[in-house]
Image 1 (cartoon, rainbow, N blue to C red):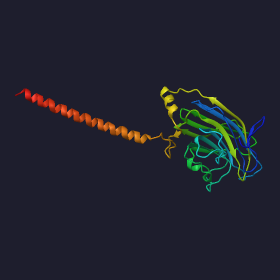
Image 2 (image 1 turned 180 degrees about the vertical axis):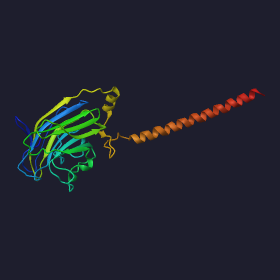
Image 3 (image 1 turned 90 degrees about the vertical axis):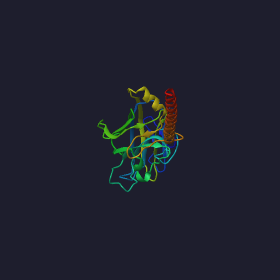
Image 4 (image 1 turned 45 degrees about the vertical axis):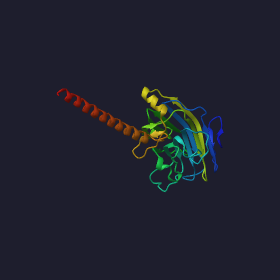
Length: 272
């Protein structure tokens, strides 16, 4: 969609031109519980130093084919976004070097903050000098047993480097894979050379399979928790469960006292 152009060697999401958006999306939803995605890509252009942008993103989301401000995709998405950001927008440029890879889990209400380079919602990330490299860049995303790991290879040494490791992350089945890119006042060529998906074998318990069929995107983190509560709220359900349990115990106690009083009275009558 958008400016994406298919060639025999790659898919160019955006050319090195201002104000362009492009994307490619899978037509078939992903129903694998444990998987590995390997992406080969290239970001290159005429701009030097920080005069280039904006970057590209890889997605596993509930909705597909939606234009928007987040590297060419919709904001407030539901699912997983992995961003290769090539332009620093925030004033805090000293704490990280760009290009920078970051991971975000969206619940439909969280927004990606471009002005802060996604810091408020970032689950993990790393610097990956993937722009204007003489080698192709590689990204590996592995999801297994509620653990998401991201590795990068941008040096042409076929040596994976750790980028992010997030545990307690839960992704529903039936979401769509995609890649998107956008340019603004600054630009670059953003090329996808290949995207390969592999199924991983795992010893998933039957209880975990039943749970995963019902879950919604969430991640168990200490700093913040990204999740969507079911309609009505689990907290309200828990409150009423406890309330009715207490009332039930109270009724049983009253009935027991009445029966015990009658038994004592009948026993007393036998002695007269």
